[in-house]
Length: 637
Image 1 (cartoon, helix red, strand yellow):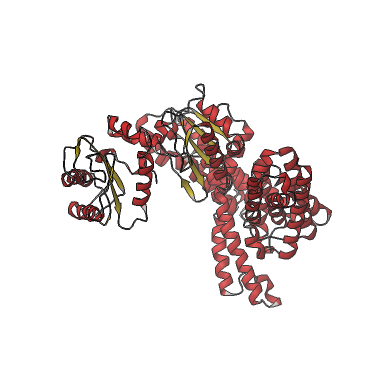
Image 2: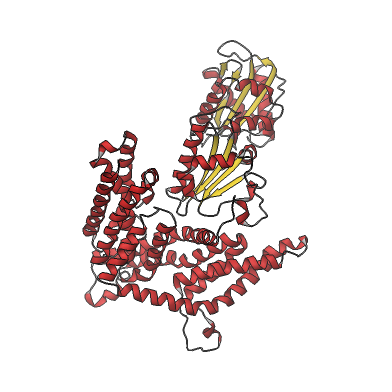
């Protein structure tokens, strides 16, 4: 619990007039009521007095912490009061109280008051902290004092004269890289005696969100992200913008750059490439925009794909007559229901992909145009359908059409922004509400009429080619994709293979799944499992911490979280990465050779039932893991 998040300047009393406990309570409760933190003075006072009746909350050394968990509390709040003359409080040491922290917690809250008490106690026991509270000139100074004393790891504090940084970490899937970068930055900051607060933009949402006070107090900002994060709040701050992998592998360098007085200043009204210390290349910009769309699309693919897979499993388990096999997945009502749910989720896949690519390029104005581009790619509408040749039916352009449409929509919106840049400021509202969405949708829609046909031809040709692969060709593709999953374990090469696999899944789910997706997931599961094998068979080459990490990698490998092997690859890339690539390539090649298909785009062992041959699939993954683990163990010094 962060005290700075509960402290409110408008309820603070820095010149408390009361000299008795009862009068002090009344003065502080009046502030809470006036600020709208409590709904009933008398009810809250009753709660405070009931707690005091149990035992005094005067802790000694001039500190008191009256608190109540009460139905009259509307917002969890810590009210701070400071008395110069002292309050007769019946404290444990019998001395007057000078610093009071009144903790107000709603009745339905969990343990907020206990967490707040623990955090307060930790700060107030630090040498010199009470003196700083006594010297604070304004309520904002009090909040800033607690902000600058916030924890590095949630348990360790450092002096407030140490440099303070804020950071944001975000990876494309929000599963592993996000939190590994957070941990690496915190550890390195602790070693260097630097205070840091790290906000995580993970799959479950924003964690440890940076407040305005955090940002204002920070000496510098570190962005370690592979997708767009909220940036306008950092206007005017020294800012370093790097990929999330740098947060994991180079935390010390990022901290040094952020503390450097020459670090670039971020300006929110400038193009995105000017926010980093060096302009991003076209390739890096393309990758970031693409990954922004892919990371937003993946939940729809995963949820929808697994729901459709359940439909097939239900029909297979309940039985379908041979003459009705074409209805597999919709024959039984329950199966049809799962198929409908999955189909609805899948239907959002292409609009979301295109929409968030455009959003990454042009921010909010690009979202609607991108969604339209993705929907047109899915529906396949083209210029033949507008009267030139009514005999032609719409031809969906699929994944590739949505990808191109997303970049096209983003580019159109950037062009419109430049065209309207000279309009009077009084028209800013009408630009956002009318001009951008109307013109963006129309121009993108017209452009997609011409994009759909070539993209659909390429998409169809690629799908036919992949479905015709067998024998040597399938093995070769499995080897390549499996090996790619282990090259950078979550980086651009890994993500390229994964995106390729998910793209094939959308076209093959009705035919039992994708062999390509199966090879990709097998290759991605090998590196973490190989770490476990190496630490098990070659214990003498790893320290205790590495052996414990090896055990953790069992779970990560079985869950298809390739990133678990990153610390080992970063520590010894020359030996680890080639070792992992060999085993991943072998696993992918074996899957390609046997034609095993997978209906789900993620999940590892938890979706093993959705493969066409579960036991054989697990065997191939185990073979790859053992090969990689043994090679890594033999090569490691």
